Length: 206
Image (cartoon, rainbow, N blue to C red; front, side, top):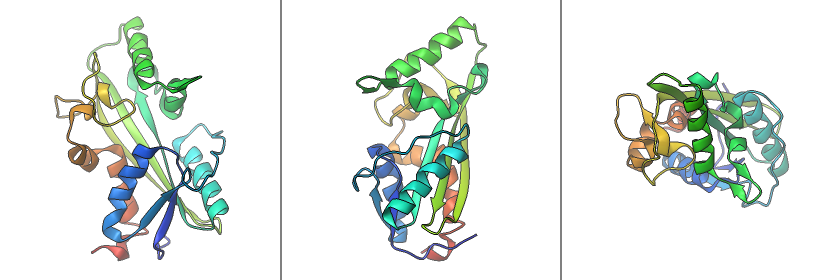
């Protein structure tokens, strides 16, 4: 496991929600986070069929473009009754000519579950893979998950993505109804990040 010894990381994403979360998670370590979007980088094509594969594409691309270590976050939701869909294609299911429409994507998932008469509880997992890549080509990968069930109609206006229909196990509110700090502490991203900071960042703990 390679230790991280810098003070700046490029987040290989144009997603402002992810930038806010990752910046908050890295702030205690004194790490500055700048996004690929802020640097004017385009987004590489994600051609892999796994979260780890796509995370590697994004992290290595940003590391090569910037000359700095780059962190990518590839995440999505896997629905048991849909054989793991939408999975790595979660964002694709929300794509429209005018940008991403997650309410539309959530309705599509729910309509498919209804068409299959899927049994309750309708289980799903949010999955997250973090990849930290260095300009020399080395990388480290960390995977996290959080399980839960899907509900309808959508509830809450916090969070983003599929949060309004996802109720984590042991709770009766959706991620979009949950206090942001509480969600961050138990999310799939937090699970992956805990493994991440106990790897390359373990010597930076305060």
